[in-house]
Length: 354
Ligand code: NAD
Ligand code: DAU
Image 1 (cartoon, helix red, strand yellow):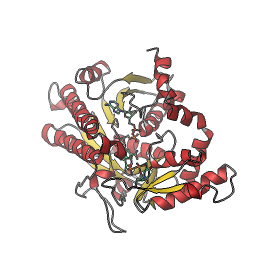
Image 2 (cartoon, helix red, strand yellow):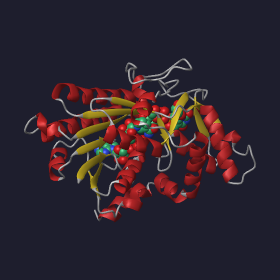
Image 3 (spheres, rainbow, N blue to C red):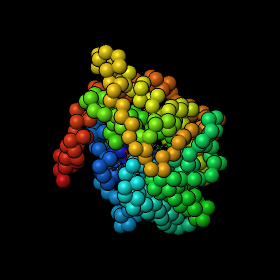
Image 4 (tube, helix red, strand yellow):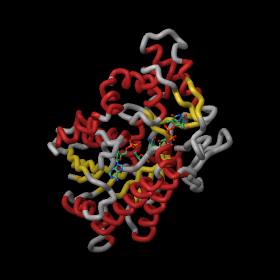
């Protein structure tokens, strides 16, 4: 039996990972620690919340008493750390929240893991792993078509969000190099799929198209993002957690670059078609607005290493994944309504009687 702590498991990617791990490994205890910020939604995990190998704990990764206690009480063998403030626009408005959770929170987890596993010396690190889930945004922005971020690309973050993720990555490596803590890091490109909070491009725009609301395209819509289906990311994390080389970094991405405006046009077509609207009905919703400050032009991940060393590749073509995603949001309007109205936040109280 292994006891695995997943942080941020009530968020978008975290909920997909928790579901995968709880289902695939009935002999693991999966402990989901989440503060339930605006981005945490336990309704994302309704289908697995009664499983005997799943435990939810509401708590903050920055809590210096809670984390060491939890590692000890639950006899944690592995940590997969996803909890973070994750939205670039919010980081521009409130950078301190990002430094706090993403940097101090990560440091608190690292320190607790080092102290607990290394209590009687480095032999205690044997069989343990601290897996840090990071982003391609730490590498900065690419100008030229045909260039990619590799694991060797120098860090060059531009937003407070990416600066905080870069700082946390550096702390993770420092704990490996200084104390010998067994760590692994992955840097992934933009994810899309079900259960994503509708502040991010894809769910926000699908919801706005459905409700005939304007689609705020930043700048000229020429920025390029590299999109990966969230369940493929979860599979990659599982693989790296079990087979990745300690101390290494793995880039995760699907070689799937889209200019924002082209992606938005595909989303409009797909939503209109699935809602039975005549083609072109929602084109006029496109509204060009002031660009995001410091907006990175292009991200593109080279995930050759992950493919070569661990055999991972994305399972879905983008068109298929996007269609599946649009259908999910259309079929789950209630989920979206509960998120946009704020009702989802009462779920924890109901479920956990608090
Ligand atoms: P999200 O915003 O959907 O979820 C974050 C989760 O962390 C939420 O459940 C929230 O309640 C929790 N959380 C926030 N602060 C916390 C704290 N102090 N203590 C405990 N829990 C806290 O984020 P996401 O999009 O699922 O991203 C998850 C991770 O993956 C992040 O580390 C992010 O940087 C990284 N990442 C995201 C993407 C993407 O496209 N979304 C791509 C690459 C990497
Ligand atoms: O690359 C990985 C990163 O992808 C993750 O680390 C972040 O957590 C995640 O939020 C995402 O960051 P982006 O800033 O790329 O994602 P977002 O969905 O906010 O924006 C995608 C693109 O769409 C970006 O170029 C900005 C643009 N955009 C976004 C919004 C919300 C718009 O034009 N209008 C919008 O309203």
